[in-house]
Length: 381
Image (cartoon, rainbow, N blue to C red):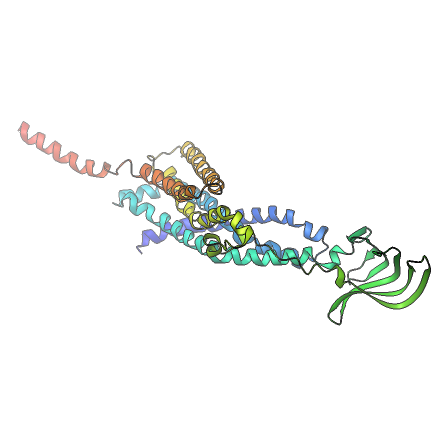
């Protein structure tokens, strides 16, 4: 790669990385605020919260990459053009294509990276996140007992705990369980802890009592130092993880198992998601081309390119919104998936057409002008 090409590529790469990190951080912050429910309501550790946040990064990264590419290209190219470095490239005999080639090469590499994440990294991370959220939702510690609240984790069952310390020890525990045939059993304990005994989840209660009303209305009272309360009847073992379209791999989206009822009813939705996985990386090239057109497509201006930048920013936003609209419309008709590819390709065509609309011919004209003058002088002589 020539030295000037490497220089232009470095000038674009730095701002692209910084813009990607900044926008990803903002997206992660927004996602983390919604994920705080995992810690607040489900009483999970900060490690689980961090795991869910990190697993959301591939999907968020694919969303912000085209925007980061567009913003970084505008910043770096505007600086290069304002400082007349682009003008020097043209004056040195470089064509427009030679000048924009490093930007398009960088956008193509980012598009390939985004495609790889769409096809493998995102579904893998999304499945792991779905598994983690499933475990959180079915966690007995969070569904059965909540500090300072009366909960009803199952029909006829009421549980209360005054407090739960950092070691997981439950204080002042109260359990009231109604029987199907009538009667009820009430447990109270000074302390309790969730454990596994014999492979079964139990609530080990210490220093408590049990009061039971039999079907005949007789009250039985028992005190205990240790009592394992079996929790296996409340385990939802029949519940399965359901993977959403964003959690599935490409072959599962394009070729779903139509023998499954959900896949059969949502075939168009799965197909639209599959084509979006392939088509969305093209927006990295399209928005890079629009950014290049905003700066290089017009003539040199010492006053800056704020007007063209504003116009092309609106055009870029419009194309991306149209892409989202087309993706949503593809869930209703399969033939609309073709436009998921045509929209970014058309945006690239519009940008490149604007860039090459005016040829760099001013240097050729300057060479021809002395010849015309000399010929006129000879004719006059």
